[in-house]
Structure formats: structure tokens, C-alpha cells
Length: 271
Image (cartoon, rainbow, N blue to C red; front, side, top):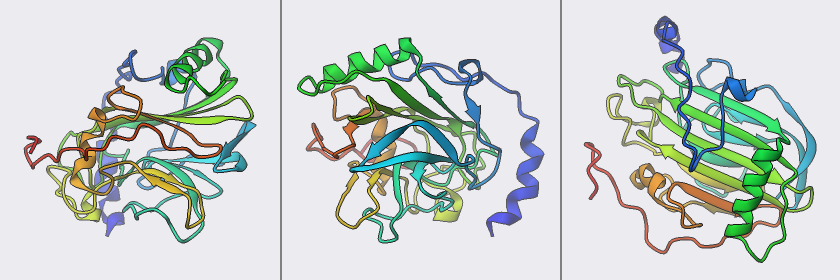
């Protein structure tokens, strides 16, 4: 059982606190020096219920609260403690975005950061990027919520592998976008999802995409729940490897690659 690992994992708490490494060309700034909050060290844990200063529209519904879940999900309405991802659409009415839904264990390694901000420099950068990716949609960002999973480990890991990915929710109060950034993806699966404890591969791999909460509206990023999801750092729908961007107020899918991602073998060699 997962709980049987808890005592052993807590023995690993004496890890040097390393400042996150920033990737200026892809990732938005994150970490404690950006006044981010940080999720508790808890397997299958999440943030507290977070109230947003402005509503965020997702698949036609306005939300003013959300949760940042350790297992790679930002959810509206309820926490997501589930560690093995299900395929979309979900039948249980949950509404969320899954940057990388897998069995993260931040007790073993890594941190989950988040913040809500109206910093003009960041808003200006996001506005410029959205206008470049979607030139026919008038958009000036007035608010953004940034969540970052920094070198997070997988459950049951016997390695030092970690995944670093990020989600940015942004709006002008009417039009909403979600930007997903992937810098370093080294594992796909936790041990409780059938993965190998040493490699972090196999079993039921992580899922990336969007679920509206009904059985009709959803999107699966190519490679989700397959071994190929580890290659998400090299795919994109906006011609920027490692970045996926979607308009989500009235969800639209644009620029999706026609080729499926390649699959890595157990030695991370591309097949």
C-alpha cells in the first residue's frame, strides 16, 4: 500500500534546498523569490482551496476557485488525489486541466509552486506571445495564475529522476488561455501505477489534456497515457518545442501535430 512508504520517505527530508533553475526562453519565473506559495510535502496532496481575484472561464463556465494538485492537475471544484490517470472524457463531472497527470511524490523530491499575479512585465510577455500564436484573436492579458512542478519525483522512486513542467492560466476577463510548458520530463509512471521503480517508465503513463466536466468536451494531448508522453518536451501546437497553448473559454484546438510523438525505450533511446 502507498501509505507503507510514508515513514521511509520522511527520512529523506534532509535534502539540500536548491533554488529552481529558470528557463527564460520557455518557463515563466517561479519560486519563492517570485512570491510563490508552495504545496505541502505530501504524497497525493494538494494546495488549499484557492480563491481567485477574477473569474477564469473554462469551457464556458466561470470559476473563481481552484486547487493545485501535486499529481500534475489544476482542478476546479474539488481536489484530485487520484494518482493513476484515467482517459478523457471523465464520466464523474470533474473539471480540470492536466499539465502532466501522474503519480508525483514531492516527499521524495521536488516542489510544487503557484501564484496569482498582475505583474505588468509578465502580463506584457504573455500578451506578446498569445498575439504571436493567435494573431486573429484580440487579447491583452490582465491576470495570470502560474503553477510550476519543479523536478518532482514519482511515487516509489529509487532514482533521482524528476519532472519539471508548468501551467499558466491567463485571461482578459472574457477570453482565457492556458499555456503548458515542459522543460524536463524524465519519468512517466509511479510504482503504484505499474511503473518501474528504477526507471519511472511502464505501467499506465501520465496524461496531459483538458476535461470540461461533461462527456462531450475534452482534449487529449497526443501521446497521453502512452510511453510517448515522455517526449512532450519536443512537441507543440504553436511551433515552440515543449509548449502547448489553448484558448479555453470556448475551447478551441489549433495547430495539433499530425505525427504521434516517438516512444523512448527503457534507456531513454528514441525508437
